[in-house]
Image 1 (cartoon, rainbow, N blue to C red):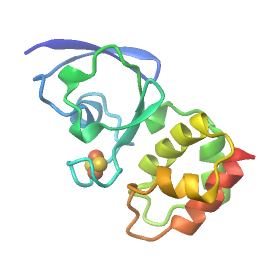
Image 2: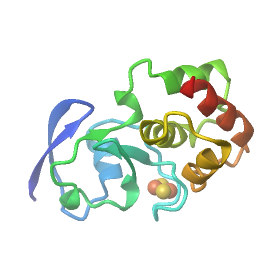
Image 3: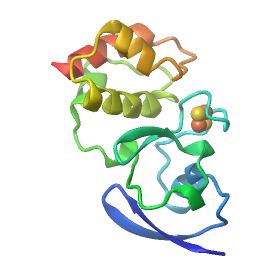
Image 4: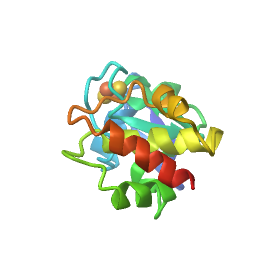
Length: 147
Ligand code: FES
């Protein structure tokens, strides 16, 4: 099996994997980074969202063999980030399963739009599904993080 050198949360990691292994499983099963969650496995729910060179990506549908040189950031790679603080202050999570994906999508959104409107937020997080319906709290926390 091929060996891949990945830059994950600022640390170089070496993994052996089939090229078609979704990055999600490399992160979770080989590197122990269980922040990104498995929800749908087809890129539809957003539970697995992590950053690739700062861009939000659904790593359940990205074969590790196609990652290339892009740096990976999972929710574990954030360190007292304003988005995390806003999430805690706003008591956003209910069951919590989708929240790492929501947070990482928000980090990417605020990088591109530091002062997003409600419609920017709705558009950016449209495909991050929350079964508990925490959307109003998420929207408030995104605004709080932007302040
Ligand atoms: Fe990746 Fe649903 S698990 S988008």
